[in-house]
Length: 481
Image 1: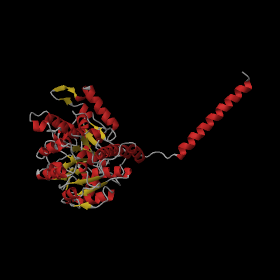
Image 2: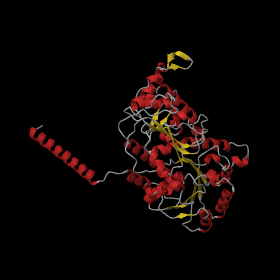
Image 3: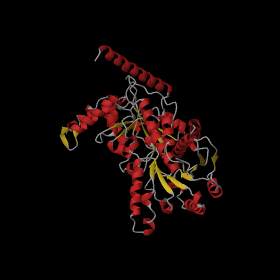
Image 4: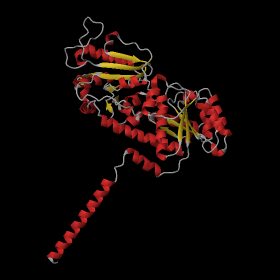
């Protein structure tokens, strides 16, 4: 082949490649990068038409508004993207403990509130094409407890014409609270109910319960179609703002246990016992002087690091050992803004669930959502991560081996050293150390290597994923999917 012809061909190919690259670069620059919101819009616009246009979210219960108002926020976000539909809230306002300020500041709901007793009137009288077609109850364990509420709603449902039926959505928290659950049967028979939980293990427990009922020898129960009831999860993590920046240095010095001060729910006794013993063994590791003649451990101000403090946030009464009166800080009856502010200053959160395990099987704890929305990592075991599957994520958790109790983990993370644990004798085998178990040793070393600090970006990315899944549920609710 003639050399000049070959050169001309190469030049032509080169020119074509340059032109193509410039064209693609131009289009890349001209086309804005899709944000999270844009992607959701595209997903929504490519799916089926919306079935539910007017949503009523209601509750007679004076609490859990942080749960159901997060659902209102998800629904409003999705409906706003689709440019159709509305959400209206029926509840006694303003919400307790200044949660109304949180709702207003975050823009969770921006429309008019209605009194709870107005719901039945609206359901009976508004029967045009804009009638309520989706009713969400914020806490069905309370909202349907008396039985009469469900019978009244069911009567209204039966009276409505076929093209004006509504779906009942029950937000639930505890499988073992069965006082209201007889109401489910007739709603299920009408294929007009679905369940929403705030954690996966509760959804799974309800599914197992419903599957068992569907096999009942009582034809009234088995014919109701329990196995077909949709069960979903909506995680109530709010878009809190102005959270404090985390220090990138210094030891772990603030841990928190949050929730009601019930020893049946949380293992306060053993946490206090272990912390007391650890301080007796080595008070300086925690930033305190040896007890000596004092009744309570006193901070050692000669140390360069701040002393450790365990915060107990929630409500109720709790007895703290006198030795720990300077170590354990109890705060109760805070407003929501105060609660969020204090919670967000913590280094790590301890679930401290009681051994009975109700928070691992039948009931969802508020601890996970509360800590994660405040950018506080949670100390968990593999079992806990599996129960609260939405938090099964190294970006927001610190995973301890189950053989290492929570207080021992706090000490190891504070010191950056777990030799005191790994060199300790194995129970019932005093000649063998805990660290001789290579699986356990690796788990402890991996935990220490990862450390307890988590970045703002890790939490932000995690929460975007949660909100995307919540939006997906909101979309399914208004499309009967």
